[in-house]
Length: 472
Image (cartoon, rainbow, N blue to C red; front, side):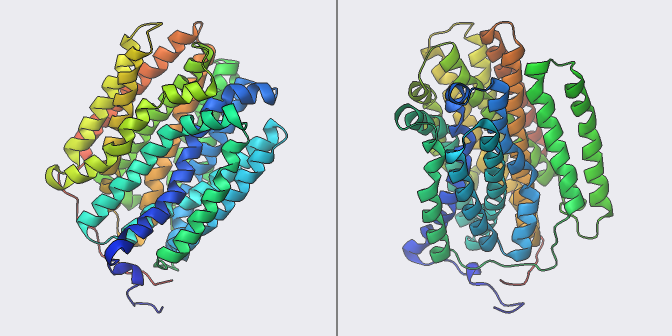
């Protein structure tokens, strides 16, 4: 295909084949998000089998999220430059190979390194997933429906992770939490190559490595400070030093993007209130939701004495809500706009975590079901609106970058939520008090996100600046 020619993806897929690209992309996205939470229920088993500590196992969980978050902008830039389908498929291959290495890991060090590589693969997959949907589904209604189902995959995968992980850990062992990714990865590659057309490409987009290094430093320092506080204490030199260097790394990133000829994240994009506000909302609701899943998983196993499988079943009510909340908000958005839906979702999430805190120190399980359902519903209900807000505010030539920014902030939120939740549990004199404090912090994050949505999410999607990159 030559420059200036409309790529095949701009034509509306006919008939039943309209769903095939969506299914192909969502298979890969499901696999990536599933791995964020599936390992949570295996934490006590990993501690025992690998003879390690809770802090070390937190690095197994957060190592994946760390590289995932830190490299998403690079994944988006590579997708814009080389074509999103090509980069998406490369990410699936790397993710699958790293999953095999995780399953074969002999100790916690090898497992952590393999998880870091999994995160690199995920960082190539996720920006491409949104950009490919935006590329294939051109009409506002089709795109809203596709984003709604994409958001449903996130909610279902995040909530089903503990259930599937618990089932695998309790039957065939924790290594199969990773081995199960191999056939899913193969299926994703086959479906994508068959049903998703070649992507537009912009050879002028380059990877800004100095900015990327500054972003990696920022996410690593933030995760280290929050992760190690539970083991060393909040006033330990390492924790204080990492916390003090976080704003330095952020400032270096901003300075580099200001001076770079081809920045990874053009700062004018952040001048858009919908784009910057939507990204911040994503950070806050991921912080609250994934912090809840991690701390609840440990609570049910350490305090209630549940097995990994029963812990997954205990967390399942969040799945019931996530299964349809995003799709429902995608349908409602055509009539109400995204703002009321995002605000509602965040308020419902806040009420859910506040309900957990109000349930007391040792509540019966039934009193925790409604809070978990509210949290799962609220997060998924808001995801579609936040996603559409960010993607609609960016020019098409930077669709991959906008997707990467949104998912970068979300994964930074996930890493921070898990790290802070683990540290609050480790440093609390009473485990249950640590759980309730973690839930209270999450509720506050939801409330801040609701306030941001009221200011930043437009009633109607803003027009996207036109751009036509070269074709792959």
